[in-house]
Length: 257
Image (cartoon, rainbow, N blue to C red):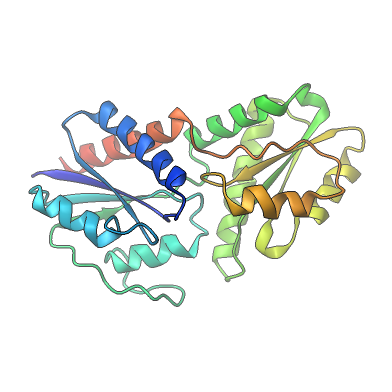
């Protein structure tokens, strides 16, 4: 057996976004050594680095077993589902997709997105510490992209609820709520936090892999006129992202050995 790892993210025309992903992958290579052949691939927008390109490179390296990890924030992303279907992990896609089935010649295991993994909780706690002054007198508003699709919306809500519980428990914060951008919930959930804890400061944390249009434009627009602290820091860069990928890879290696 020659195992390989394919880390799949969305992709961006912003080279800085791609560099952040590549830095995380390089940290995974350092953590895993020669145990795995590792490739990063993108759903779109990065020429020569798309998913089939990554699969082809692994095959050319002699890999016959692949772990494909979706570097996405939530199981509620329709991209996670369509990529899994195109890789052959699911018999059917739950939503419409323009993807076609990829050519996968070896055995493939489809991993999990970030959701409420302990490493992600650590990332969010660090982001909160960067803006926090007195956790017991502060409320958290988590803001995610979300989905309007039945089933996917509920996945987003479940994952956010789990993150909220852990952040309050581990960080000692006074309250927490979650808002989905696609459902236009930001002002409503801000009002909810204000009504429950009127004297608390509200800290806003984006549930996004890296900075971009949503964190720099959409969220600030939705927060306009709402008293809060928001610096727009995202999951990457953070060393715990590489830890999350490495842990999932090690668990898979044990399972298939």
